[in-house]
Amino acid sequence: MAGGGNAIRGSRVGAGPMGEAERGEAAPRQAVSYYCSHEHRVVVAFSVEATVPDSWDCPKCGLPASRDSENPPPAPKIEPYKTHLAYVKERRSDKEAEDILDEALSLLRSRRASGDLIF
Ligand SMILES: [Zn+2]
Image 1 (tube, rainbow, N blue to C red):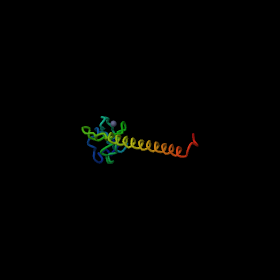
Image 2 (spheres, helix red, strand yellow; image 1 turned 30 degrees about the horizontal axis):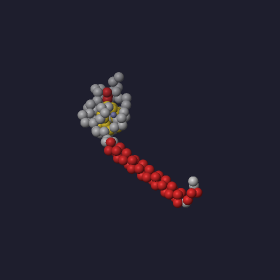
Image 3 (cartoon, helix red, strand yellow; image 1 turned 30 degrees about the vertical axis):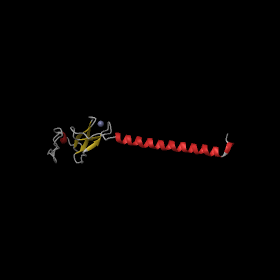
Image 4 (cartoon, helix red, strand yellow; image 1 turned 90 degrees about the horizontal axis):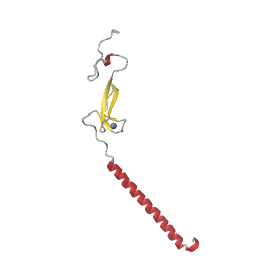
C-alpha cells in the first residue's frame, strides 16, 4: 500500500523503533521511559509534538520518576515530616490531655467548693 504520499513527513523521531512512524494511522508518538527510585520503569507515550516532562509520577508507588535511569529522583523525605507531624500530634494530644485534666480538676474543685450537694 504505497499510497503516493510515501515521503517521510517531518522529522523522524530519533529513538523510535524503525519504521513505526510511517504507518500513518495516528499521530506519531514517542515512548518515554521514566524510572523511580524503587526501580520501577514507567513507559509513557507522548505525541512527538508534546512537551515531554522531565519527571513523571510513578503509578506504582507514587514517587517521582525521572528520565534518567542512572539517577532517579530521591524519594521525598517523609521521615522528618512524619516526625514533625508526630511531634505536633503529641504536643496537641498533650495539650488536649492537659485541657481535659484542667477541666476535670476545675470541675472537681468547683464541685468541692459548692459543698456536698453532689455527693
Ligand atoms: Zn515506583
